[in-house]
Image (cartoon, rainbow, N blue to C red; front, side, top):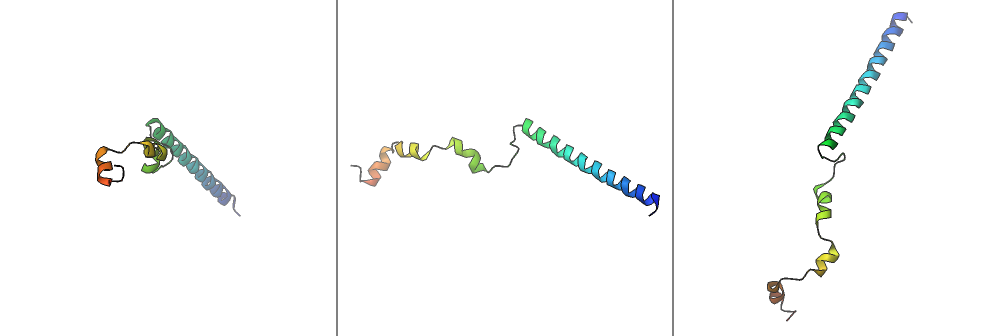
Length: 77
């Protein structure tokens, strides 16, 4: 093979590696900016984010029913 072909292939490989490194750097920078703005790095569903705010099942069972609900049911009289 011609030495010019070797040089051209080496240059192309170097350019590909540099482009990959640049893409990785930009992705890392974008992740860091998202974290700075308070956005989680991973995508979470709205339900998963709301779970800490929702009362647990045990607490819901202990919550007293309003008077109108117990009168409408008729069983608690």
